[in-house]
Amino acid sequence: MVLKQKPRVERGLLHSAKWASELAFALDPLPKDKVPPVPEFTDEDAKDLDALTLAKSYFDLKEYDRAAYFLKDCCSKKAYFLYMYSRYLSGEKKKDDETVDSLGPLEKGQVRNEALRELRVELSKKHTASELDGFTLYLYGVVLRKLDLLKEAVDVFVEAIHALPLHWGAWLELSNLVTSTEMLKSLSLPDCWIREFFMAHMYTELQMIKEALQKYQSLIEAGFSKSTYIISQIAVAYHNIRDIDQALALFYELRAQDPFRIDNMDTFLTCFMLKSGMKPELSFLAHNLVEIDKYRVETCCVIGNYYSLRSQHEKAALYFQRALKLNPRCLGAWTLMGHEYMEMKNTSAAIQAYRHAIEVNKRDYRAWYGLGQTYEILKMPFYCLYYYRKAHQLRPNDSRMLVALGESYERLSQQVEAKKCYWRAYSVGDVEKMALLKLAKLHEQLNESDDAAQCYILYIQDIFSCGEQLEHLDVCIALRYLGQYYFKNKLYDEASLCAQRCCDYNDAREEGKALLRQISQVRDQIETPSADLFAPLSNNNTPVRRLSPLNLISFTP
Image (cartoon, rainbow, N blue to C red; front, side, top):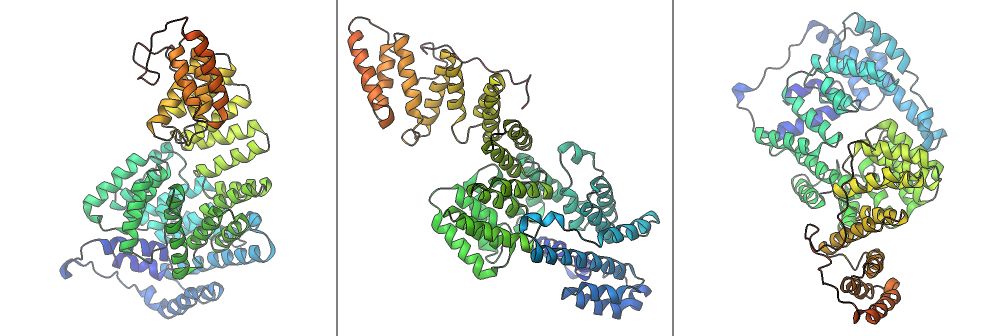
């Protein structure tokens, strides 16, 4: 595999070469007699050798115009690719320099690579004549993507993959253009071992985490058990489904195997932020990455998150801007900068940042969700409904998206849809423990007292089962309502229990005492059977009717 990556190194495709080299290192070494032969050296390669060697030295020093100048008369396919690639990177470098010099980070999209159109014309002619190899097809696809000719780019990347299946860069570029599982299934891909890595990567991107984990497990069993790439991808997958303990364990294993690794460390830090009591570890990681390489994109994002956690939002935004200067297509930096602008109440800048994130990757649910929150602040419910729907489509089993959708429907007086969203959020596993409370309040507003009481009972059972009742101040709202509900229905034992629980909360203590006095006045006059308030809902002694299951078939948010 290492020998197969030599052409990528010679052509300056270093990220693909690094990826393949890491995989090769995880495998057992081959015996000498099974090492593949070195690729043949053609007459054209021999003729262009001196010019190619000179140009590659300039290319490695980022003197792209100089490299292209000395390659313009070469004939070999290797020299032609490096010639075109140098021109492309020269245009990208000039674009980034102009952006940094004259514009702020939010106006990056207004500057274009002036070389793209010329490159497209030249590569298109070669493509029509079938004179492009796998590497130049890859470059042609990149040029088309940069010009927003996405359909043509997909076709060219698929062609590049068929011509050169072991070039991971082409697979990765194609993955950025796949927007749905239907589109993924429609692609005609070569039957090659690297296809399994691509499918696992796509399943993770499309939030099909169960399928992704199965793919990675099969790759581990196939011999890649020591691969740091697979360990990092599994950790990212667990992070995406909020299994933080599993993700942290894998990231610790990754750090033990590769202590100077910076790739994916921004996700590692996010795990620290999502788990309480991890501030010392977060601080240590940020300082450690600064010592390794303070000017890496991931390091800037980690420091930005560190300052964000300390509520120093201006400093956080500054570091995210630094990350974008280093890599204008850094998805995480755009999204995180949008979050910081939201914290600073700069909604227009937040909207621009989120839109840039979507331009980089339309599958980023965080950017769609952030846009929904921004328009919610601006009191534009139809806009925020649209963006929350987009986020929900990308994360159909994420309760936060469903709760946000429900709130949007509620603002638009579409109570039926709102109730369905809240119930669905509870059904898929309510992360923030808010769906049932909001559903109960909605039933209460609609004077549906039995349904409201049932939702409050479910909410209290859910909170008490987690042992978090004292941390949830909204519990007193549920207990207060249930106390009054049971009192009106002459179930005084249950009403008394709710009133006593209300006395545990400052906000409901006086009402709880007042209800207890009312109960004591009538208790001696009426005998009522006792029931366990928090018994399972299937028991016959449940004092309210069971909440009717909501029909989700007729409505898809």
